[in-house]
Image (cartoon, rainbow, N blue to C red; front, side, top):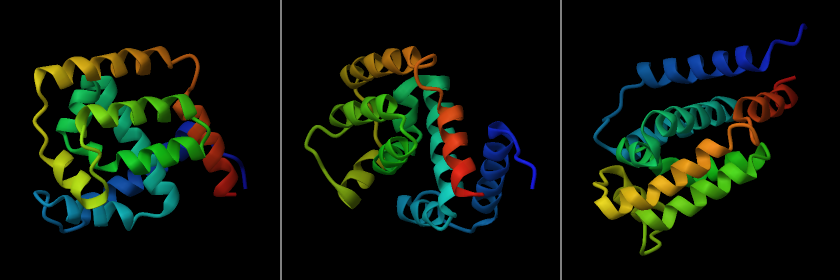
Amino acid sequence: MEKISNRALIGRLYSSANDQLDNASFDIESWKDWYQVVQGLTDPEKMVYLIVKLNQTVTNGGFAEFYETSFGIFSPEIIHVLNEIKAVKTAEIISNSLPIVNPTGLLDDAYKTLVFNIKLSEQQRADLYSCDIKYDHLQDLENLEDLLGEYLQEIVK
């Protein structure tokens, strides 16, 4: 079988994940329903979905948008996936954003409940902006597409 490009592989997996989410019947107002649907994806689909959504939201509107669109509920999984693909600097930035939105250190369901409908304060937005700057500076140091693509090429052989 001929090897496809990283971009094509990521695109196919993202499209498959997105189709499954579009076709799943779940209550979008319930983080538990959304979370369960995402957990039902294959590991490669889930990895791609989480990293693509992270990159889209942070690139579009920074970490404030990432959290206010509720994608922050997946932060622990995203950190795990980023470390798995060796994007450790990116994982560190996500980790550093957590105490800004979750100053009391809630875990698991309590964390997801907090973040699902979070309304950030101006101070939180300002603090998250420093994470945006760090994320933007990683562009040439950690290419998520390359790291994710190379990892996926190995596991989907």
